[in-house]
Length: 253
Image (tube, rainbow, N blue to C red; front, side, top):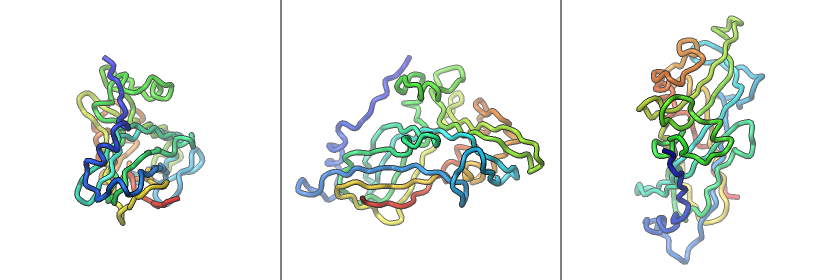
């Protein structure tokens, strides 16, 4: 049975005021926070279709498409108190208008970490858990049962051991059976982010190499071109996902 996907923007400020951030009604209003999702492969900016990169398993690879969901964003202060917004952001590197997740009315405070879910948790990741848009329909997970959506489609080709033999790969991540394979991402700030109204830009970087090498070496040749029903491959990518994202510049406009 389809479940309704509910957004929790309403009541966010009420929740924030219940937390102790040392602010009062006289102080600054909420901030507009732009989370910008960027991509690189090691030290190189991601380029599609015509750029080859080295992998830890020894197979040069190129990227043809990258699409994914992030959700359940939270900001945390030094006391461990959290502001949470249960929204889903879809990112497609071929569509610049999907680069930014816009978080409105973030309460004033001094925040020390950002966290979010890479993919979709078990509440949302069910058949019909997202609105019935073309994008979400195209991201549905085509396995039997109530298994929801792809978390990610990371697709391309690899050169087998640099031999000139070119093969396809499809790193499609999602749930398999009773295994929820989403990644809990936790990113401390190097310096506290002090929000006091206005518009802020927070840049995030996804390093695609990290999906393939840390802490596990992911080998395209070992796991094959299709991994949707392969929990061993899904587990490797889930474990590697913890180091994929990093925080870049944080700036006030």
